[in-house]
Each structure stands twice: as structure tokens, then as C-alpha cells.
Length: 391
Image (tube, rainbow, N blue to C red; front, side, top):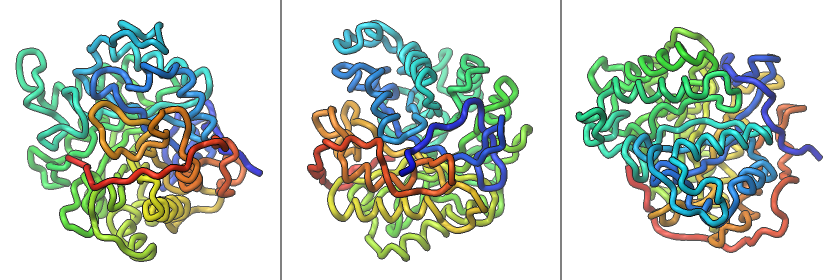
């Protein structure tokens, strides 16, 4: 029985709807999990009670090959309090903790995608719904697009040549942005400026561009609408590096109306799946998740099945890449669809089983449906709640 695989050594680029190894041309799939907390106060909460090396080991054993690491620029300078389980991280800045995660990830073969989750510390995206935040004071003034770009260039320079870090998720859920209208809120313009600036100093990163807000109660998600790609696309100075990134959640998280699997698939195709089906670019679902109720697990199985084969997969190709939200909760989070139980010590087995179709299998490009690395002793207790997502 096949086991989920790590990504090959080196950097990645794109070809059609596939992400490929730059070294071998092999078609690969990013099977990531979100590690959160650095955006809130500079360190993940679970690091206070669990060695960070054990956390990354468990991510790898579960079947993930990549970490989408959320941060806020402000929290990178925060200093961690005493962390009993991680004395080497106590007193470190958020940036130094990011460094430590990246260093250890590299030693065990995990990759890292940096996620500019917001500018000032806190949860969700920037309060203004754009990539920059005028309420976040930088150099004595509100953050501008130029400041945001400069922040990315600094990160790209810091990790240049480090093949553990494979991409930049430019801005989390820019729900007030526009797409291709040439205005000051045009996300294509901002993403192009930032992507080119990053690639000028670090030409190997994937440039991950999220979608916009889909207003309408059918599906109500802050980065799900990528319909603009049909007419207007991000074109960078270094070809083969753009990856489009919707987010997707079920009713328990966002409160949209339920539907059959085929109805959901049709909507997913209309909003973002067409990008893959028409061989325009790869997709990386930067956030998707569910609670472990029967309804949510059914939704999760339907969505990961869609990711595995949305139509248009080339011979020997991989399905849509993604990052499950999240490995564990962070400060102030309620009803987050994390993989760990509330005790933070074991994965929820039915949830891991539902996720397993999105794992990467290097030999065949297909999914066996098995997750031999899952924690077989995990507690299957359900979590439930009412929608809580905020922009």
C-alpha cells in the first residue's frame, strides 16, 4: 500500500495546471497543513506544551509534505514568553521562531510556504480587506503597498537559496480587492508588483495569488472567487511561477447553503476549478477545513475527492494542491477545524481519513485512499459549532 510522499529536493515551478520539480520535471502535489499563531503573537500556542520538533514530526507522519506558515509582520518582532516545552524558543522573536521551524522542517524533508496572513498582529486577514493596512504603522506612517512589497522582499532575501521555503502566499483573503479593473484596489496590479519584486531577489519561489470575496449566500468565502482569471491573469517577469489560491469551507464554518456533491462540484468549478480544467495554471487551496461532524466529514470527503480529480488532469498528473486549516487552534480561535483533538495530543482519525485523498503519492500520481501514516489511536470525538469565520 502506498504511503504519502515528501516533495523532491529543490525548488518548484509550474507547467500548465501542474506544479513540477525544477530539478527533475516531476509532477508533484503540495499537501500542506496550516501552522498558525505567529500571526497572532509570534508563536503557535501549542509550542508552549509540545516540542516544536515533535509537532513537525507528527505533521510528516500524518501525510503532509508542506507547512503553510501564517505570520503577521508585526508579530515577527514579538518576543515569546517562557515556553516550557521549547526552552530553546523562549525569548526568541517571532522571526527567529519562523527560522527554527524552517530549519527543522528542512532536516526532515518538509517544505514551507510563507503566508502573509495580515500586517498587524491578530486573526484573519487585514481589516481593510486589502494587502496593505493603513492602520498598521510602518516607519511612522500607515502601511502602503510599497511597504508591503518591501516586507516581502526582505523575507525573500532572508531565505534565498533555502530550498525548504518554496513559496510566498502574498496576502490572505483580500476581500475588498478588485480584479483587473486598473484601480488602486486592483489585486492583479499589486500581486504583479510584489511577485516581480520577490522573483528579482529569489527567482525560485512559487507566487501564490488568492481569490476575492464571493458575495452571495450560495458560497460565501473571502478568497473563493477566482472567476476573474478567465479574462485577467497575473503575468510575472519569470514565467512558470504563478499559482492561484482559493479558500473553501462548509456550512459549519461559513454558513452557506448545503447542496449535493454534484451541485457543490459545479460551483467549485465555476468559481475556481475551471483554472485547473482549462490548463491555465495550478491551484493551491490555501485554506479548507471542516469540523468532525458527520455532515462536515461528508463535505470534506466530497471536496478532497474533487481536489484529487476535478477534471482536466493530464496523464500521470497530480490533482489540486492544498493546505488544510489547521493543525491546531491559536489564541482567541473558536470552532477552528483543527486536526488535533482539544487536548492537542492526537489527530482526529475520521478527519485524517477524509483528508487523505489530497495527499501526494510520488510513484503513480494517483491516490490510493490510504493514510498509513495516520495516528491509529486517535480519538474520533466530534467537534461542532456555529459559523464563526470573519473577514
